Length: 327
Image (cartoon, rainbow, N blue to C red; front, side, top):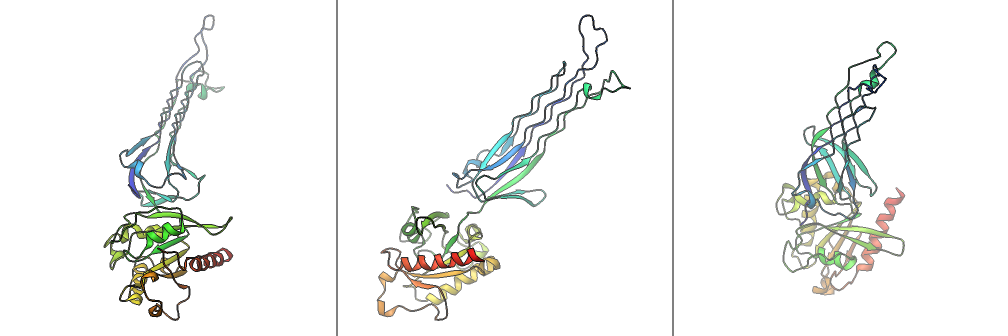
């Protein structure tokens, strides 16, 4: 199951209390203060795990707590630090403070970590308060509380190219043909119920990540169909691949409708470079192939099923991605 949004509660460990103690040994009737400090509380730390692709693990566990610091003891024994709690999330996870309505961190790198809740400080024992003017302090400090937050985890997939299209235009077939991904494929709308990612290898050293999201219908930007739920997963892409069905009675109209939904959802997403691929040419007579727009650049005709035209499509995508590398 694909889960891309979850809310959890995190609580860092409390700092241990400082100890009030005096040295008591035979033949040392007036030993000085020897109370140790309390240990710091453990932190709650979020770490990117490149092997994760969903937030499903958080569906049943909503509370996460780090270990408390130990109290200080006599004989200048300091308390141990509380154990840190590590939380693993997939790359592309955005962490937000729910109460403050503030983004804390956007975790996009494999090695990225973030301390989401800091442990409390351990209190000082009375030995720490000894001075030349105060030889026998009876003062010690309690440990402070650790941070406690309600946070949301929102996953947005990391992909270079995002496929957009109406239901049943062949997005999953294209993804499967170009990459090693194995999405569910069938000849009916909304076969794809969650985003899929695949790595497309251009040559021995060059590759890109391709994302397929559920088909868009009119009103997708308002949440109709599955559009709004998954459109956010193409917001990080560098390039949009508009996939159209040549057997549609109005290919131009389909293209304009897709553009409109993207624009209404996110004007910046609409401004991304685009490639238009007209699919299913294996089902259409060659003499009747019509252009979406004679002035439109980067248009190619393909059959995701047979593989016809896919080399040309990859050449265009490679060229567009190369342009962005130079910018």
